[in-house]
Length: 118
Image (tube, rainbow, N blue to C red):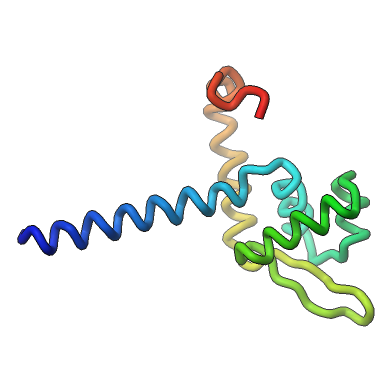
């Protein structure tokens, strides 16, 4: 493979890694995970998300804005309300897969000092 072609392949991999890291940062907050989990069941309006997650209304609204900007959540007008839904069924699948993975690695995750207290 030529050096030019090697550089293109390396650049694509770096871009993919950076995009993956950015995506996982979207999932890295417990409040956002709670909201996404609630939305996996059905589309909800803000006050329903507040009830289901136990988060404050301003907290839910702030995290929804982040999730919308990241493309993880979509919204639709429903009368005077805005109803939020996950943008892809793959998000629900990913969260389910994470739970299955935790069945295998939860002990290591719990004992990992790198993420303690964050």
